[in-house]
Image (cartoon, rainbow, N blue to C red):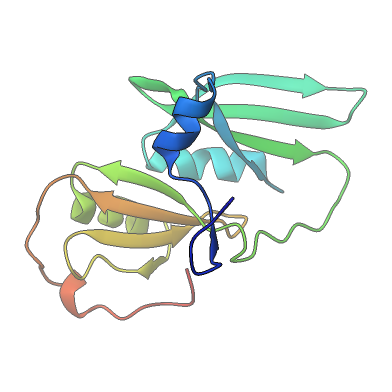
Length: 162
């Protein structure tokens, strides 16, 4: 924290922090979400193109960990945590969302709709859409490159919240 001439406290600029001390590089590993139905959640993420890369059942801890990743991008994973004993989960908006870049947002949303997934925020602009997992986790889909707005998406209303 730095206090300027007017007495305003701010954080130091990143370059000053980096110059002042060595910060070891970090590698992003995964984002964990708690799930109540691992099979339904895995099927949902498979619709987005993710694949299971490993699974770990812990008998003593009574939980299962399932790691998913997009082919060719296995270093950025989603960890699904399923506790075997019933537990109430509340992802809420405080969690935010997971975001994935897709080659064609219209085709992706159509594939999801055909599988029974609600498109909460349709890709009206050809750029962004939101859907939810079976456990109500918000997923943002972002178009790679430009697509012009197109029907039926351009006039489709929002459904629920995202």
